[in-house]
Image 1 (cartoon, helix red, strand yellow):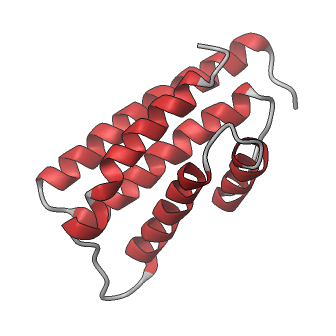
Image 2 (cartoon, one colour):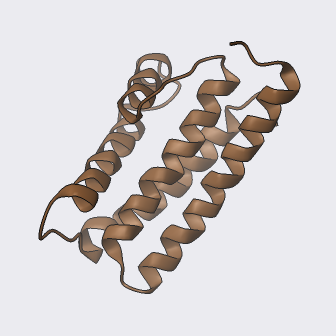
Length: 133
C-alpha cells in the first residue's frame, strides 16, 4: 500500500528520532558496562535510520536481512555508502544476533567500543541522504 506524502514524512521522522534515541541508549549501556546490550542498541540505531532511508526512497523490507540487502543493493553497490559502511551494519547485526541468541556469550568493551564512532558517523551520513525531513 503506497503511503501519502504526510504519512511517509511522519514515518521517516519517527524512525530518525528513534535512531537518535537508540544511540543515546547505546551510550548509556556502555557507561554501565553492558557491552552486549550496547552492541544491540548500536545495531538498532543503524536499523532504524536505514529503514527511514528505505521509506524515503519508496522501498520497504519486512526483515532485518531484507533491510540490509536493500541497503547493500541500492546504496553500497551504487557507491552512495562505502563497502566499509555496509559492513558496519552487517557486523553489528551479527553482534546483535550473537548477543541476543548465543548461550553463555557476552561482548566486551574491546569488541563494541570501536563501533560507537562508526555508528554515529553512519547515522549522520544516512540522515543526510533523506529528502523528506
